[in-house]
Image (tube, rainbow, N blue to C red; front, top):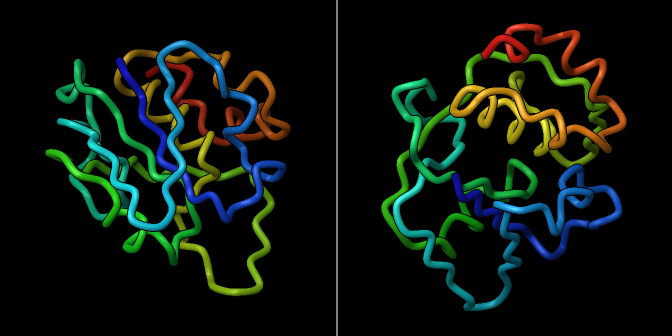
Amino acid sequence: MDILIVRDPKEPTKKCSLTPLRGMAGLRFVSVRGSLRVDAGRRLWLHPEGELLSAADRGGDLLLIDCSWRKLPAMAKHVDGELLRRRLPPLVTAYPRRSKVAEDPAQGLASVEALYAAVAILEGPRPELLGRYRWAEAFLAANPELARA
């Protein structure tokens, strides 16, 4: 599986849960700014309003747009391709969110949590994705079904 991560360059990389994954095989990071466009090809796009992601989606490449929830529509305008919206099942985040700007959705996850969950559903658990995530143990304890995906 090829995983494309399109990220908002205005988001601090120091706080980004995906930063430790840079350089990992199978993951490609692209920052979009200005008029830059990204050709994603045909991909499963992790999106809160998509169809439920399931084992039937196996074999597809993955797109994750890494930005704040309120910026998702604007960031998505930079991505071209056949994007198949898929949402994750209800999961519990371990990330201590404290937004002062907008309320996060009830089912909102840290980007690395969403990526781990999607890969677990599509291919099986890949512990290395959470290897440097501070709240990995709490996330997995709150979502034991991901270990059996």
